Length: 132
Image 1 (cartoon, rainbow, N blue to C red):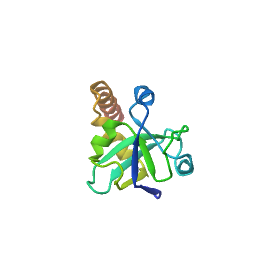
Image 2: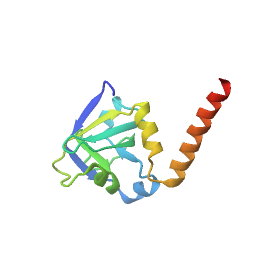
Image 3: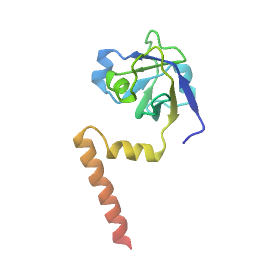
């Protein structure tokens, strides 16, 4: 997938005002942002359950408890990853490939995003076929 993999062992919750803004992002320690760009798509994988999610990374924003081995995310991300105990977890974080981004948008939980993305992909394919 990518050449940069970071393993994390702790999860904390985002503040409620950050979740309202967008629940598609997570926060990492600013030291780890040397490996990732702000708002870059990343794949977070639970190494125990092999469940993964695609999220967009942001810096720590002064969030307390966000160490180099901690991930700050919303409740939905914790559930999707199958995390039962937030203090004992093994997560890997990698840059998302094009396949992960397309797969995530094609199967997005928001029906409006999913529908618009599918229409755009179908229109793109039909446009390519028009040239043939």
